[in-house]
Image 1 (cartoon, one colour):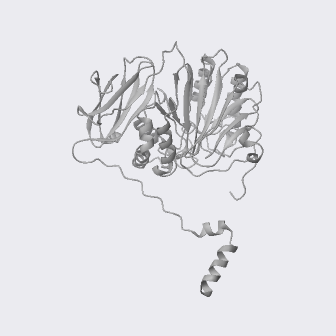
Image 2 (image 1 turned 135 degrees about the horizontal axis):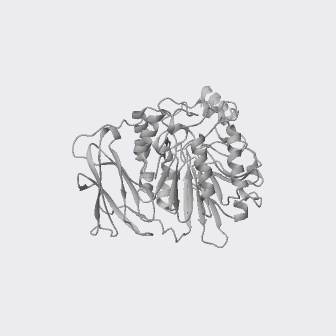
Image 3 (image 1 turned 90 degrees about the vertical axis):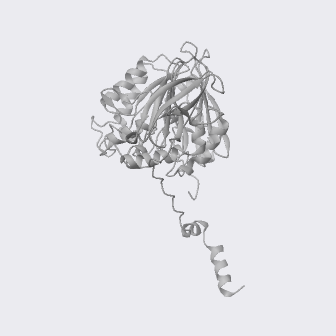
Length: 460
């Protein structure tokens, strides 16, 4: 070994590992594929996606490689010999060659097989994808709901998470809570390209072909980082969002946005738009500052008060807990408190707050009363949990998602939460009582937090 080699090895042994890592060149991100019409006979370019499903209807989505007339064949047999054809629109360049149909006349709790048709021809060979309709409204059942956020700047970032979710298939619905891509723009073409890139991730493609999938947005898939209602071009963001998801609604007829309400298995879901009407985070909380806007806030409060469901799920891109960062509900304390007071003063039970954005997964009892779960990242880099008296569980390593198992059929409704990690499997499964859900009882710390996980890890 020469003198230079001895010096180099001595240097390696003395330098901290963080210094050595810092000297490594960062791997460049791959380019985002540009989506353009492809010549020749149209074929299935992305999808299909199963969107909003009820006991008698289903919204089905697909994207063609170029202009075509969309339809779906759907039936109860695996080979679709009993299938009927449901006609859809002509998919054109202005809509990114995407389209959807609402299939009606379905039966509750029934598995349906389906295949997209372009110009009357099937786009997939057997085995055809299939989904299960919701139970009849008079017959609620146990429901397993998966949710997550923050898929990462490139499609491959979330491949491990979606691949495992597809393999396990152990949930009935999937909620995408924002940062479903990282376009950071309101440019229609760039939004389309980022959506296509993530829609083509093989594991995600498998999930959405068999599981009803619902989406809202957060900042990165609405506009620039930490963007709000002042973003120029937000109408274009909403237009493209509507083209690529098959939700039950997009705001209200005279109040556009990505918010909507739906019910499944006796559980009510309120999915919020926390960007389109949002006041800038740094504005003073002077009584007019708002996350939701006046109309959406009234819609949420009225919906919660009217709901008779044992569980009411409220989905938000932004986190609700108190000790968080400025791009969350903590910057909108007055409006957050108005919602909390509405729930408390009207004795509204079974409200559960879901959120994303934070690049870790955690559970909170906000103000020792209001139950929140935040989940991610599905593909983005991880953030580190900090000490927080409102938090009762949390994990911040690897690619993460959460599953809620909700049982509204029991004499006393019951909730089980699960935290999953790509490659690590089930990290935690725990039952919470209805008293804990409603804040009548404090939730004790889960074992992973006692005691080491209450403090940030060194070197992160």
